[in-house]
Length: 234
Length: 223
Image (cartoon, rainbow over all chains, first blue to last red):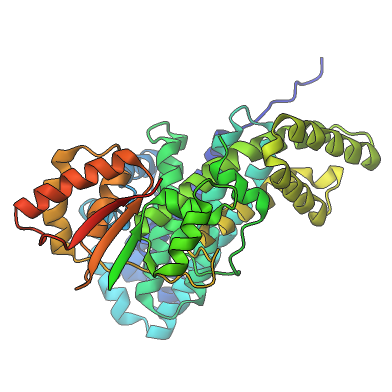
């Protein structure tokens, strides 16, 4: 008997990419967690082995951390609520990894501003690569899945995350870069929440609507007749 | 001078030439500068995305069937038949479906790349939604980002919470407009009767508590 082809949906795709998404979330929160190779070249890697261990957290530790981050996600669709949520997420990280904080502080003194910028940029490049790869897989699944609307919304959220990363790379001001990466962080955590069945797609719709307003305008505004009609159609 | 603050339904009317309030919205926008809060902008983007997604889901069903085409010619026939059926079912969205059909053809659809089309369409949706914050249906529209007095916002929202607006978004829109950092008078314009009634009730509370001066803010109903 031949094997039966298995249909796979967006949850299976997201399961497959969980480790990568986890890496992006940590990277968006604390980019210097990816600085070990730079430190080793400066012959101080031995002092920062704890940073390296962060890459090898157990599945249970990763899940517990993400679940706690998800509880900090904003309830209200306002940018003010997003900033509060970011502080809470940061608080969770700092409480769980107290011993890592002084190391991250020290790294910011050891690395030159140029090296720091390079690490952030590499982290951002890597994040974009993962998101684009995830979207490739998701795109195939959208046509297969029995819940196309959720899969489509998740892909739109990831498309937005990818566009925010591109903007962050163009941006010189660290504050503006941080704003873009905050958007990426919220979107990815919400997607993770949907995968786990603890967050509603409605919330992700709100996130996309609020966060997409932060994008730099890339084209002149025009409303093709058909798109305009959509706005008032039932 | 008066600052005119719009509710979401008027922004949508301005964007959509087929909206019953379109002419009124254009006339208002040409007559006086308007301000649109970030919450209203986000709500307009949300409305657009929901409707875009509802309509595009039907396109995905056509694409899914088209993956089983035996030849490129059959693929094109399946697409044409599928879109014709969609337009018959939703004639009011004819132009929209023709627009999507055009995007798909421009992408160069083939049997082996159909799986990549959702990706392209989803990116398109996000770019369109992002641009909704800059509506320019009329050349003279002057839309600015609202600057809000945070401490006033806190006091306003504490009092207005008791009024029970229809939803959180309406509540936020009202509070944001009442908390603008400006010495000018503010007129909040809406075509939603419930928003109008709740807005008037909230204004009475805010004035009686001395949070905003009498005549500083008004709510106007357009219908």
